[in-house]
Amino acid sequence: MPTVVVTGANRGLGLEFARQYAADGWSVIATARKPGEASELAALSGDIAVEPLDVTDFAAVAGFGDRIGGRPIDIVVANAGTSGPRRIEAEEDARDWVRTLEVNSVAPLLLAHALLGNVAAAKGRMIAITSRMGSIADNDSGGYIAYRSSKAALNAAWKSLAIDVAGQDVIAAMLHPGWVRTRMGGAGAPLRPPESVAGMRRVIAGLTPEQSGGFFSHDGMTIPW
Image 1: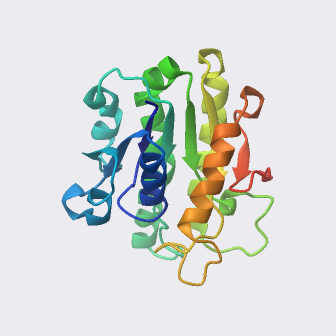
Image 2: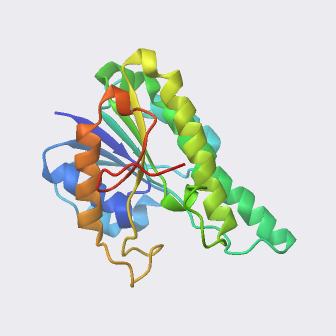
């Protein structure tokens, strides 16, 4: 039975990843900051183990591989994220910007290294859920500096990760889920989580070693840096 790790699985895209993989017979290790409050996750059917993980706790993230043991992991979906402050105009905004970088940029890479041995054992895939808003070439509207910069940093880090792990038969790629109707995306978004996640799963399943380090949309299109 293949195994997937999904962070931030208590709601939104993470919850939908857990739902779909479990429905297809995968063993799912789903993380939530407060598992006791993750009622929708707890209600899912299938082989799902819910693990507590606060991605701002770097010690917990670095030790996550020890917690789950040496089992092979076929896919890691680093999904947990935050939107951060919309404007950087005051001291507290700056502090929130740093926290956004910790959650969106630093924690995913730390998790990737914590689980590298598990993923290498399965010759698996490491997937960062990023955003088109992290594309510098695609930015023609400005604003959202904390979120944009955190996702651009994640993209740069994950690209380096892909190069660093190439000799271990591990594929690392970045996926933009589209504009999705989640708490972060808002009610006006055109995509529903099931559509977005189904598309991303198809992209993940079809990734080749030559595509490692790539930045793709949920529909498989390549996104400019």
